[in-house]
Length: 50
Image (cartoon, rainbow, N blue to C red; front, side):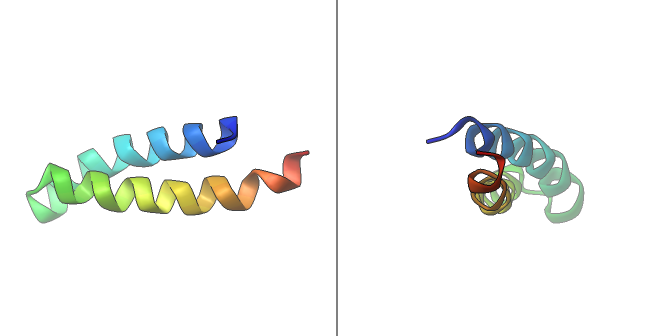
């Protein structure tokens, strides 16, 4: 995987952890949503930067 994808997944997981705990009262669900969104953003950003 490229660096942009890793960074976006990690940032998404961190944001998802906080958001999931505050909104859903479930950090695990927040991490899953955050990693999914981070992967989408990282995949979209990755090829354009080359």
